[in-house]
Image (cartoon, rainbow, N blue to C red; front, side, top):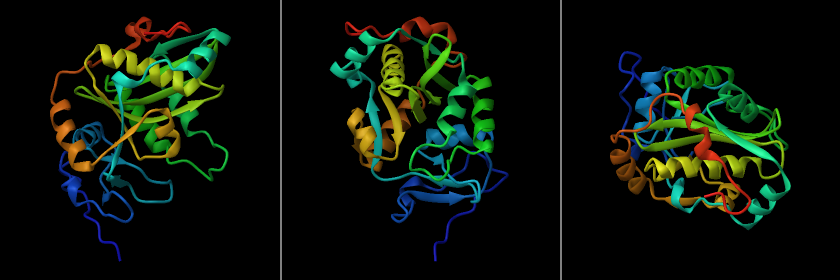
Length: 243
């Protein structure tokens, strides 16, 4: 029988030590609490994130190893350069946050449901209004064809999900976001749980202990709070290289 700590509703910034998360299922740490901005920001600063289905209690995780992207290594590769030469996409920041989240929550082939439940959408939109949650959007004319969203804590960006409606849409959003973050001295994008697609895009794995040491410093550095929409011009990618 799995026995998990129940979070104290009166202490939104208190979590168990993430190093004590379960091995099976990998990273399961605690349950309960809420999705308030204080609790969410405290969780991400400690390497913890919520992940649960609509019929489950609120579950909190810190897996080992941790999947991350180095912003310095995310650049326009040959395949993306070819794709950019075929299309007339434009990229924006923080101009369609809820639409990006809802697109990430939409059913996908081979998936029975989504963990981005309505309560999660509302919680992250609240963080977006407070200037902590951000999105990168890829447009073909007026159509949204790709995007990514996540949470910024200090100089750590915690990626939550991304989507494509056209080939290359999610990668373009990811690379454009990394370009902007690199310019602001954000070295990492947390991608949470490893999967083959993320590794193919260039993600690497950190042992949890290394990840926690790294983010303990990054989360305390001055970041870039507020809307990122005025910085959209920094996110443009070009078929010639984009950087």
